[in-house]
Length: 393
Image 1 (cartoon, helix red, strand yellow):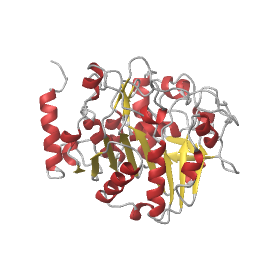
Image 2: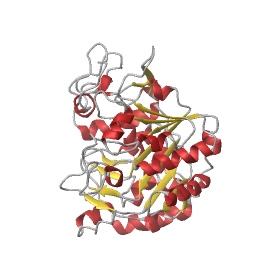
Image 3: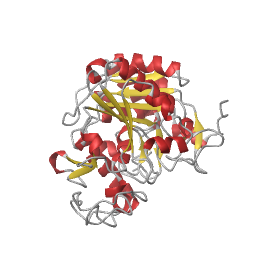
Image 4: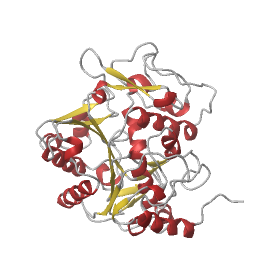
C-alpha cells in the first residue's frame, strides 16, 4: 500500500491546523510549541521591515527577546558566492537577502539589542565575512550601519583570542554526535537567530531554519581538509567527507561520532546531524524568507526555477516554524522517508522533535497572521509547471 499522503487530505488538514491551534489533543509525547507567524509580503526593503515588525509583535515582541542581549544571526550564504539564477543575484534566489538582514538588524537595534553579530561559515579562504560579502557584490557597510553595534564574523575561521572554539553538548547524548564544536562567537551570544530562504535541498529535502544551522560548523574542524589532531588555521574545502559521507572523523578537538557503523549516506546522516546541532545550540528565533526563492535545490542548477511565493514565516521555536514553512511549501511535516519531499532523505524535523527541540505536528502549533491554506505555494507543483515569468529587477 502506498504511504504517500493524499493531497486533498493534506490540504484539508492545513485549514484545520490554522483553525484548531492548541485545542487538539496531542497524539504523541508533548514537545515544545510556540506561535508561528505567517504573512504575505511581496517585496524587500520597507515592506519587509513593516511586515516583519508586525510578525514579531504577533509572536510576543522583539523587546523581551533581545533587549540588552548579544544577538547572533546565522544567515545562509551557501556556496562560494559566484552563482546566480539567470540575471538575478544570490539574495533574490538562494541566499538570505541583504535587505532582510539589514531590516532585522534595524528592528533589533530599535528593540534594544546590545550587540548584533552576523554569523556565517563563509566558503572563502581565508577571507573575513566582510570580504566575502564584497566579493559577492554586497555592501557590508549597509549591514554595519543598520544598528549601533554590529559585527560580521566568518565562523569558518578560528575566532580571535585564546579560545577559538567552544563545545556544545547535545542533550541526551545526541544521535550522530554527542557534542558539536563551533566558533566561540556562538557561545558569546545570548540569543540565536536562524535566518534563511525557504527552499528545497538536494540531500536533505528542505532548507529552513534547522538546515541553515549546518553552516555553523567550522570547516577547520569538520571540513574535508581539516587537521587530524588540531584544526588548520585556515579552512579549505566543504563538509562532504566528515558530515555528508562520514568517510573520516573530525579533528580531534571534536568528539567522534557515536557509531561509525551507521549508514554512510548523506540522506541518513544530514537530517540527524542538523537535529543534533539545533538541540545543542538552541535557536530562539527563526526568520524564513519566501518572498523570492528557487525550487528544486539549495543552489541554482539546471533543475531549479526562480519563484515568487511572496511569503514570510517567523517563529520562536525552530521546529514549529520549519513545520509551518514546510506546510506552506505544500509538504507534510509529518512525512517519512520515501514520501514527498523526503524521497532520498529522512525527515530532519522528526529527529529534532525526538531530541525535544519542538513539535512538528501542525495540530499542536498555533499559526497567527495568514492561515497556511492562504499562503500555500506548492513547490513541487510549480516546479513541474511552465516556468514562471521572472519579475523585473
